[in-house]
Length: 356
Ligand code: GLA
Image 1: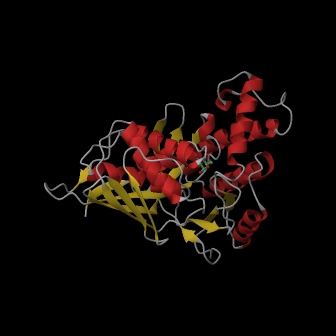
Image 2: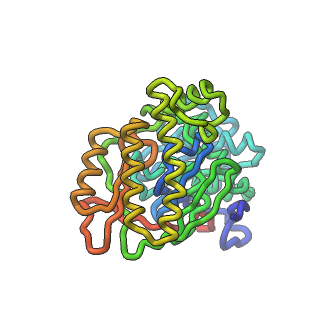
């Protein structure tokens, strides 16, 4: 797939106000595999975060989170790290782009989004990606190519916001394609697309209502457990784990999830290619059981949302994203009525940058 940088569309000389959009994502399957060098199958959704950047004179970056009615201002070079919430993403974007040698210019950033925050649809990666594209665009600088930009955005979350996330969300936002899911082998990473032909079925997300912040949830603890399992097994990543039998609990269960989830990703690709929607549903259910029982990232609100989907006729439903709250993903057959509040999700295009 193209690893090129995202360039400004509709470029006209002299006008330097730019707008960047980055989508959130749904992960069809392949959960907690990204930081274990494994496989996943996300797609970018139509909803996301838009950042409009206007050049300013002076030395400051001003940022307005329009939906929250909040503002931040700081000297551009180099920004301090003492910030929380959405502000750490803005400072992180400026800090990491400067560190990558990109010349930025003072500007006002207006941030707006229609992807629910903390609902497991990756509003945070959409924020980081759109901020970086807008900051580069308004400065007339070419952003890093997509994989490098995904890594840079992941450093914003890791080093500035305290969430040890992997690359799944950023790659989905930067490489999404309309009508297709993205098979990512994190070793590389190697990316290819798979047509998402659902034959009248619908994929929906349902917010469990349990809010979680990845930094505060058990996400980082799961990463540490994976690291501990690697050390005991003498491998660099769980992709290479020879098995899990020798490990103490709960490490054995964590490894069993990662190994079985990698297998489910390719089983899902085969089910989609073969048009076997029943099997797509069964794989969602199997992934959920593994995430609930082996990886232990579910919570009662999520279990209730999964049950609600199943009662409404879902062929399969599972917890999605980092876990400990957020949204569930479910597959409904034609004619079924998903629960109230469910959002139908379809694969949309990747992040983009244009003139206003
Ligand atoms: C979050 C992280 C991703 C990934 C998923 C779990 O969304 O941001 O990197 O680890 O959880 O699959």
